[in-house]
Length: 377
Image (tube, rainbow, N blue to C red; front, side, top):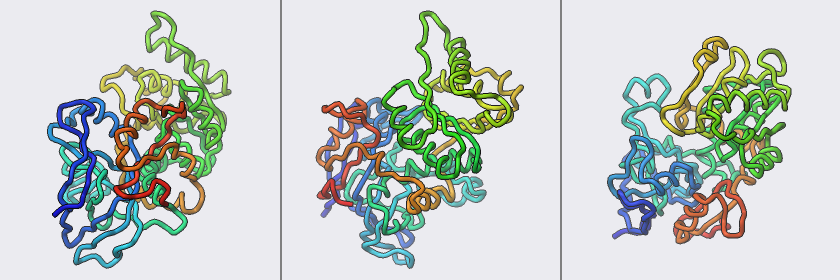
């Protein structure tokens, strides 16, 4: 007998989804069963939905979508003492082996055996129930809603990029390329950590307006690409325009300490390494084309630190929850659209299109769990 309705993507067929009853997971002694209440739609979910793959990850068998979730504990394993049925939790959706060199050295996000929700071949969280090891279910403080809990996954991504990899400090400056949800949250984390300057960069004016109202101190809309202009030539021109427009230097107090690229666009990466200060740190969060051109002479002469950011690691979820619960990050303005479970298809199409039928732009869409009211908090 099953009562676990789930939202499933068909294998090898683009944009073909259906609702199905899945078995209720059986919890091991160290696991908890969560009744999922709220799930945010991530860009990777939409990419799998639209294309059936991301890089080497291919949907070769039907797969439940979703990984940005929160819910209420339904059942706990026999060894669990710190959680109980009824507890509200944010779900960290990647269970690792705990035995490999990366798990043992505090970089479990690089574990080769990770079971990550909605990454082939593993099912995601868009159903009634999802089970995780108990340490990946984080209790939500009373002042945070279940929607806030669902937003902890992308917030942890931002914490990992800005705080951990970027080693961002109070009174430093940051520029973020790409004002989607992760880019906006990177700005929010930087603001919470005491940034002196936060520059938002995007080609969409509406996104820049939101970034300025939410966390950014400055915005920059790159110029248009000219006819027959190469990406490298364009990036040099865009970087020069950005520095002139915003008074950015490559050394001294007007320099940019940290650049986050949350767009994945080649020209953004090329522009960023030309804008950043000497000795600065560049963190790549956005995933775009796998093979791009960058000027390594700039990287060498500036002695830049280049880092790739992959999901999140130890301590990122607790810090994300702490920043939100302390009021240093307000997640509520980011939730632009809400959908009941039965309208999941519409939610995905709306997110893919970037706006709903009424013309309202999408920042983050939230799908409620089965039989959960969209207004439930």
